[in-house]
Amino acid sequence: MTQAQSVTLHLNSLLRAELSAVNTYQNILERDTDSRQSALHQILEEHHEAARLLSAQIAEIGGAPEDDASTWGGISAITASSSISDPIALKALKDGEEQDILTYERVLTAEELDGDTRQLVRDMLLPRARAHLSVLDQLLER
Image (cartoon, rainbow, N blue to C red):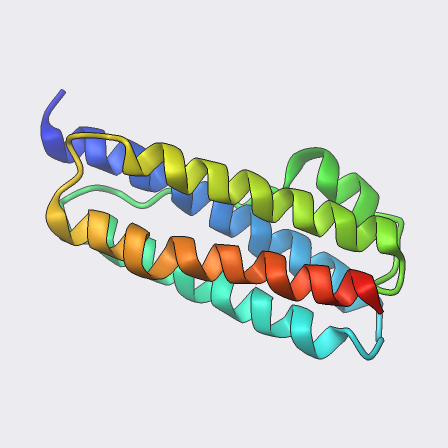
């Protein structure tokens, strides 16, 4: 396997996670209106942007971005039957964000990452994912 193929595999795992987050947030936001919707909509937009950036990075190294847009596994089952005001739904979203952070951290340990990819993940995408946890924690405190 070439370095580019290996990096593409790692980036596609991140892309799948971001697309799953997009679907999960879209599903809960489509069904509900609440004062929390604005904050969750901002997180949704940041997941959209992360997916776009990852797709562009994959294409730049000659890979093919995946478009598997499932939802966050069991998290989607919880959010599908809950409202934004339900702490269980917010906790499920937080669990999804924590899973994404672990995926980003795992990818950062890959030695074959090129400098641009490592910088994108380390300096932009991972900090943004961590910030989502803070937002969700604040929403859970309300």
